[in-house]
Structures are given as structure tokens and as C-alpha cells.
Length: 218
Ligand SMILES: Nc1nc2c(ncn2[C@@H]2O[C@H](COP(=O)(O)OP(=O)(O)O)[C@@H](O)[C@H]2O)c(=O)[nH]1
Ligand SMILES: [Mg+2]
Image (tube, rainbow, N blue to C red; front, top):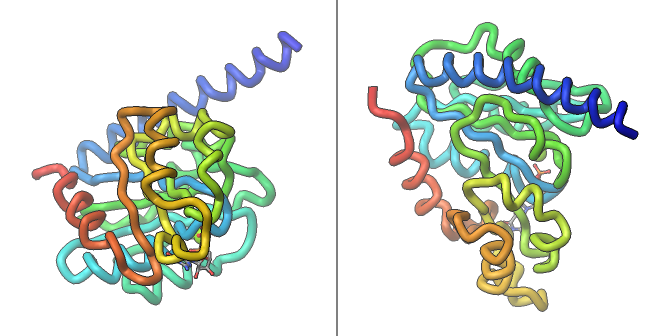
């Protein structure tokens, strides 16, 4: 058992070294980088489509898509009008690591203001791997149920921002957005919380306003 823990520690330390290199590069470029995490189907790509559609006329946005297989999400983001898109296929791994991001950055154009990394859909492993991001965003959909913050506290504790998605479905569910927010804040009172519908548009302008205000001044 102690041996397994040692190996895991080594992997995380090696990851942190590369993440620090990525972070320095992002800071030098005045690039705002977000690590977007959440379950499969929570609406991560839908949020990115809405964000790119809202902001891309004013702001150059890049997206790195992490998936076990396929380039479906990258194609969706390209159609939405992002300035730069890269797909990473992890070939089975359930999270992205800093080294994968470092490799994906080859060919990234100068002048991007925001880079969003959509992590592999998973509520556990992505929280352990720093990618060099400035903001850790966790997206949860209302349909997942209000017990998820208590059941997956690691992800909620390690995030700075929580986006509660699919609020348009609230009339059909027992959980309402305020209840989900309260449960999440009980686990991490420092969370910045947005309530949105990525497909119907509620809350998207607040979210995009926040993103714009977080871009470092050059
Ligand atoms: N009703 C509703 N459906 C949504 C919303 N956001 C995403 N979806 C749907 O949820 C499914 C998964 O969305 P997707 O963006 O692919 O999730 P991802 O796996 O987290 O990237 C799709 O069928 C979306 O149309 C929302 O705000 N409201
Ligand atoms: Mg997706």
C-alpha cells in the first residue's frame, strides 16, 4: 500500500513541475487559462460554444479539448468560431496532465486572451492534476442532484468557481439551483457561483462578463 502511495506522489510531483512551466508561459503571455471540469454530459462543451459565440468577436479565445476518444467536441468549438482549437485524445486516461497540455501548446498562435481547457468528464481524478491554469472551474448540471458536493467533495474544494448548468430544467426536477448552490458552498464557502443554462442562454452574459474582467491587463 505504502508503495502505491509513493508512486502516486512521484507522478503528482512530476506533473506539478510541468504545470509550473505552463503557468509561467501563460503569465508571460498575459493569457487567462481555465481548467473546466465536470461529469460527462454536464454541458462543458455547450458552455464553451455559448462563451465563444458571445465573446469571440471581441476576444481571441482558444480551446483545448480533452477526451478519451473522438474529435467531436473540437469540431463543435471550431464551428462556434474559436480562434484556435486543439483536441487531445487520452486513449483511456480519465484526466488531463500538464505534459499533455505542454505538447498541445505547440503551434498556439500569439494574441489569444483566453484559453479554456475542457478536461475529460470525471468528478474525481482531474482535481488532482494541476495543468498550469489560473482558474479552476467546475461545471455541474442540476440534473446530477444536490447530493453531489457532499459525495465528491475533492472536486468542489479544489475549484475556485462553480457553474450550475441546466437551470432551464428546474421546473421538472426536485432540486432547484439555490439548493445546489447552498450544498456546494457548505463544502467550499469560497466558491464563486454562476447559475446558467448553456443551451437556453440564462446567466451566460454574467459568466462572460466575469471572464472578460479576469483577463490580465497587458
Ligand atoms: N436542457 C439543457 N440541456 C443542456 C444544457 N447544457 C447542455 N445540455 C445538453 O446536455 C448534453 C451534454 O452536453 P455537452 O455540452 O456535450 O456536455 P459535456 O459532456 O459536459 O461536454 C447535450 O445533449 C446538451 O444539449 C442546458 O443548459 N440545458
Ligand atoms: Mg464535452
